[in-house]
Every structure is written in structure tokens, then in C-alpha cells.
Image 1 (cartoon, rainbow, N blue to C red):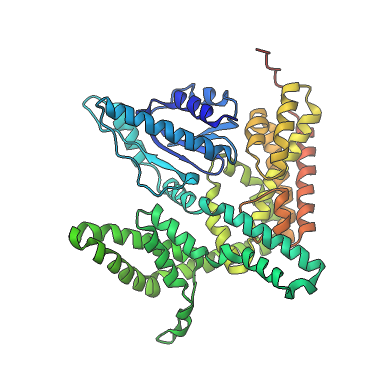
Image 2 (cartoon, rainbow, N blue to C red):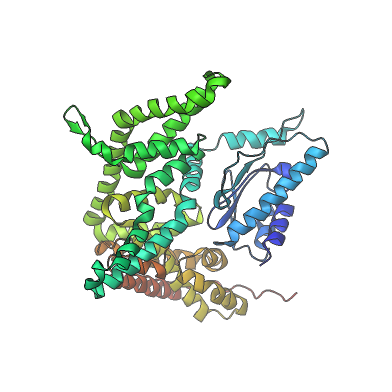
Amino acid sequence: MDYKSLAKKIFDITGPEENILHAANCMTRLRLQLAQAAPETAAQLKALEGVIGVNQTDTELQVILGPGAAEQTAVAFQQLLQAARAQAQAQGKEKAQPAPSGQNSQNQENDIRPKYSIGDGKKLHADIRAKNATPFKLLLKKISGIFIPLIPGFIACGLITGLLNLLLKSEPALADMAWIKMLAIMGNAIFYGMNLFVGFNAAKEFGGSPILGGILAAVITHPALKDIMLGSEQLQPGRGGIIAVLLVTAFGAWLELRLRKIIPTMLDLLLTPLLTILIAGFAALFILQPIGGMIATAIGDGVTIAIHEGGAMTGFILGGLWLPIVMLGIHQAMTPIHVQLIQEYGVTLLLPILAMAGCGQIGACLAVYFKTKNKFLKKTILSALPVGIMGIGEPLIYGVTLPLGRPFITACIGGAFGGAVQAAFSIGSSAIGISGLPLTTVTSQPLIYLLGILTSYIAGFALTWLAGFDEPEEPQAS
């Protein structure tokens, strides 16, 4: 795939450069905020080779490209955007300044906000719409920026841990060997430094200095806290986990930005970081970390009680709702909850349940494959099934089930049955960032997890076969 060519085609459809207010990418999508999107924009994008699908929300156009492709296309798109902006500046047009440096390639974002001129109502309307984005959607963007760069670490460390656990179950005597202990350290490394990584990224997303966010995260994680008593209460290193880190770093970034406005420039480098650490540090230990601890405990207890008490019914509901959530692109909101659960309990009970949604999709698409006579549809399914089995369901969502209608619903129900199995047996995952069949290696009971997968496959297949679908027309050869 020529990602530069694909980026150019997307740019030609969504541009010119002043029409693109924001450009960013996540693991599978190029996310664009446009001043104006023509009615035919989505259809033109869908027709491009390499585009899996297009999803449009109130404030964002999401071009679904798949893992790897999204990042590389976004890099090329950013280069085109920068070049177009530079050319426009050279021609005397007023442009907004580029986004702050330090953004990484997995979550690059430019803020391109043109100056307004008299009578230019479109630009003004678009920026007002951007400013009026709901707090929830803005929060999701920040969460995405914090955790997406960590996903490769979750995957690598999770697979090491999962495979090592499988090995030790079969050969427990290996546990005392030096190389096994080294592998255990490698597998645990992401969680050992998790608070620091999140603190660094969170401060950057909240507009502060990343290193100060990392330091504040280190303050509430420092092992020496256990030796300090506040009245009759002993401080707890790492209390509140990721939730406390997010609260502390958000406050630290807010404080830092306010301090920079009131501290003289000549003293800024000296006083701003000092006061940020001192004020935010004490606020963290006395107020924010205890609040984070209560929130984290409530989340952990809530999830545990819901799954243990609700059992299969809870899993059925969660498994059935997950595909629409993924389709809307708001699934990243679950990432900090998964991380918090793993920090607190060693596993997240939610991920195996939610992973069943993609498995129901596999079953539904297999039913479509064997029932349809459409050669193009068969080819589409065959090309998307391998990545679907590996946990990337968007090609099947946007290429098969959603366009056909009923198979999307039956795929959701198929995932619900698999989710019920996972919840009934309280299957947990010790890592995030992977789904589908690869998740088996990091689950607490691999055989039961595979049973859930099989259940979703069968339910999705049977329901889709019974419900049927309207046979699409064979595309005309060009």
C-alpha cells in the first residue's frame, strides 16, 4: 500500500488546508475535524482503496484504515498539511501557528485555526462548533492521547507474561531459573513504570510539562510514602493507581499554566516548576490521591460486583453493546479502566467479555460467506477474516455486516452470548491492546476463553443464517 498516495487522495477530498481544523490519528483511524464536509465526502472516501470505512460524529470525520496503516497514512497526511500551510503562508494568507512539539507519531495532532476575516462565516461557524464540543468527547480525545502510545508496551509485556505463565503451568520447576526471572521482569516492566508513563503523557495532553507530570506521578508512587504517617493514617504508595495519576497531573498542568501567567519571565524557569511540584505535590498527597483512591476502589468494586453478581447476564449485555461502541470510535474510554483493574487485581474482567463482540462478527461473516452468491462479497470477507480473527474487527464491520444491516445486529447478539460465557466464569486478562484469538495467551483460563470464542462464532453464524440478509448487487467491472 502506498500510504503517501492514499494520504494525498484523502487530502484532496477533505481539503483545502483551511478546511481541516484538526488532524489526528489513533490505532486504526485518521481523525479529521473539518470546517465543512460536503454530502458526498464520506462516499468519496469509502471508494478509496485502503479505506475500510468512514464514521462521522458531530465534530469529527473518522477515516478507518486499520492498525499500522492509520499511523503511516497520518504521517503522510501531516506532511501534506504542513506543506500546504507553508505554501499558503508564503502566498500571504494568515494561518494559525503549528501545534506544540512533542507529539508522537501514534497520536499526532495539528491545530490549524485560520484567522477570521469579515464575511467569512464558515470559518467562524466551524471554530464555534469545535469549541462547543462536549466535555465527554474532549475527554476521550485526551484519554486516547495518553494511552495509545502505551499500547505497544501493553502488547509486548502482556504476551511475555502470558506465554511465561503457560510455560510455568506446565513446568513449575522452571520458576527458579535466572532467565525465567528475567522474562518475568520484562513482562512486568510496563506495569512497574505505568504511573510514570501515564503521568508524562497526561501532563502533555493537559498542556503542562511532561517531565513535571512524570515527577508528580512518581511522588504519589514513591515507596518511601509507606514510612509516613499523617495523623493516624499511613500513606500508601500508588494508592488510586491510574485514576489518582490522572487527577494529579491534570491539576499540576492547570497550575503550571496559571503560574506561567503571573510569574515574571526572568523567574519562570526557576519558580514555575518548583511551585508546581510543591503545591501540586502536597495537594496530591493530602487531597487528590485519597480522592483517586476512592474512585479507583469504586470502579474496581463496581466492575467486580457487576460481573460476579450479574454473571452471564452482565456479560451478555456488555458483549452485545461493544460493537456499536467500537463503531462510534469511543471505545478508548475503557482503556484507563482496564489499566486500573489490572493494577488493582492483576487482571481486567472486562476485556475478555468485550473481545467477544468481534468473535460474534466472525461467525456472522462466515454465515454470509456461505450463504451469498455475490463473488465480490465473498472476496471481501475472505480478505478481512484473518485480521478479524486476530482481533481487528473494523474491516468486517464496515465492509460486510454494517452495509448488510441484519448481520450487524446478529453479530452483536453473537458477541453477547460469548460475553455471557466469559462473565459466567470470571475470565480475566492480564494485558490490554490485543483481542480475539491472540488474547487467549494472557487470559486466566485459556480453555474457557476459547469456549467463549467458539460460542460467539456459533451464535453469530446461526443467528445470521436464520435472519438472512438482502443479497447485494455484484459490482460492475470497470
